[in-house]
Amino acid sequence: MSDQAEVLRRIVGNMNNGLAAPENRKTEKRARIITITSGKGGVGKTSVTVNLAIALSRLGLRIAILDVDFGLANVDLLFGITPKHTLLDLIRDEKSIFEVMTDGPNNIKFLSGGSGVEELTRLDRKKLRKFISNIALLDKLYDIILIDTGAGLSRNVMSFIMAADEIILVTTPEPTAITDAYALVKMVSRRDRKKIIRILVNKAETAREAEDIANRLLVVSEKFLSLKLNKLGYILYDDNIVKAVKLQKPFCLSNPKSQAARSMFALADALVENRNSDDLLGARGFIQRVLSFFGA
Image 1: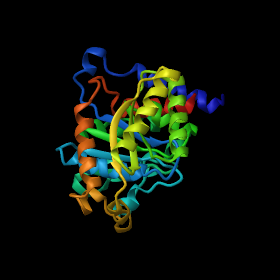
Image 2 (image 1 turned 180 degrees about the vertical axis):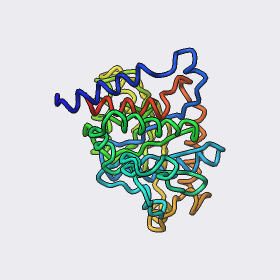
Image 3 (image 1 turned 60 degrees about the horizontal axis):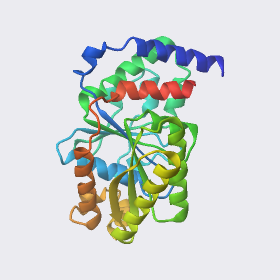
């Protein structure tokens, strides 16, 4: 372990010790942190993220998106909006959290992470504390924060997965996508068998195909990994999704009556109804966990 990593872990540990007393934590408002990820690229993960944000916002919830796909950050592309600022502007103490968030449709806000999180490991104690205090403000501003990760099993991706309250794992009927999704579940099971993972099957031809894939993942995960997965639902293949990407407008807005949009609205309903716990980490707890993983 490097000296830098040791210092980071010690700082974050001290911050954890300084959190509110247990009796006060229950009364603090905290955002629900949901990481949306996939075992491989090309499964429509970011499309799911932006359209789920739209669907959740229609339920009256305040939604923010943090795009931490370091290599292919493209939430902004699907919204058709060019952000003026990224997480780096916040880290470098140049802007506040209010200034770096970009306005999206339906009162959604989003923030492009870029390579910002890795730069956190180089901050001194004072700047790190200020950064975490800035992030903590998101708990007061939003009900749900969606974390759009990169695909795969890199340390960066796994850090955001393990730090969240829950995970939406997107897969498709492609054999490689299913295999990689199971590999990700396996990685999670080694760290936390109680982690909430919701399976979303995208681009399925039929409802039966989608159900079969989800059930297969549920059975093998419980049998071989002792980890119980949850079915969130599915989105069938729909040409409107492809058209929406070309238009740079979420399909829940460009064609809200399409099959894909109706499915997404149903998924949002299911997600709100299946809130497993009131003991949420919130934005502060989430970023502190991420930093701990980076420092370990």
